[in-house]
Image (cartoon, rainbow, N blue to C red; front, side, top):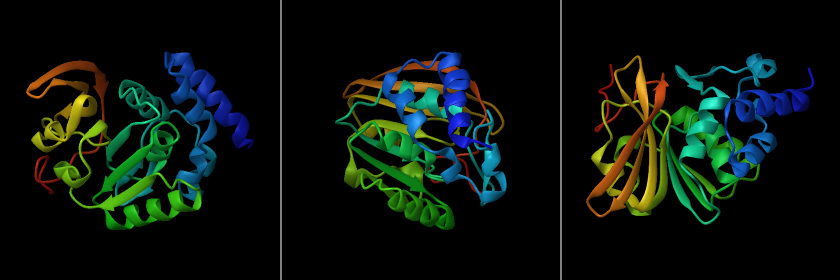
Length: 215
């Protein structure tokens, strides 16, 4: 299989073809090789329009949803962003193609280490992988111009809201453990936020002090 052709087709049909218009997001999707972020056993499925298993009971998200979330976050070249749920590192790499600095937090130590090594090997010096409870954010690195969560919680953690810069954008799935609404929250002033729904999604549960409790 020609994965370069498959990647171009994915962007043309699944991403641009479904309404993603942000030029920086489309360029990042064309550049970052999703096959580098999945296990060898599913490498040939890298450009299918679906999530794929990456170990530790986690998945790499459907490409369209990743693009939708990054576009909604409106990343700009000088931004500092926080991602919750590093997973394979794929979304962080895409974000790293656009923004100045990306911090990504993963609670599974094995996934975090694999993502850290992978991103370093691919040259993403502006992406830093941390291991820990992502629901607490990273107060020492705040404020963030954008926060994106790759896991769904019962509501938006207060820690994330407090770590969002004025004018910052927060994208996360909110709702039950099976189906959530993808929410965009913009901090318009110190104590003011504007919220909108971007549609129905299905994500793994956000586990942590300010999310769901581990089973």
